[in-house]
Image 1 (cartoon, rainbow, N blue to C red):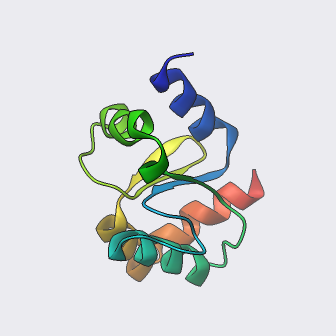
Image 2: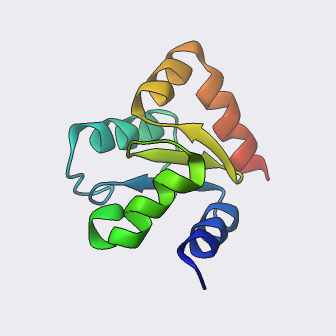
Length: 106
């Protein structure tokens, strides 16, 4: 299986998927920590995550997959949402809560 196929499987197989540096319990960068905090603030306690620091192929592959240069990256229901800054903007506007509400309903 190619790295792109693996990523597609992860993204489509989990309602909420976060590619990050570190783990939700121990984020390894401020942006990843912020992404986890935002998900928690939205009431999302159970989400899948991949520590890109443990897999160089995934770390590069996810950037190519979404054509997005930075980590973290959030996917909801197989759709790319964005990184930490976009998550924060959408959280503040209420849009992210709506997107995540659809994930828990599906």
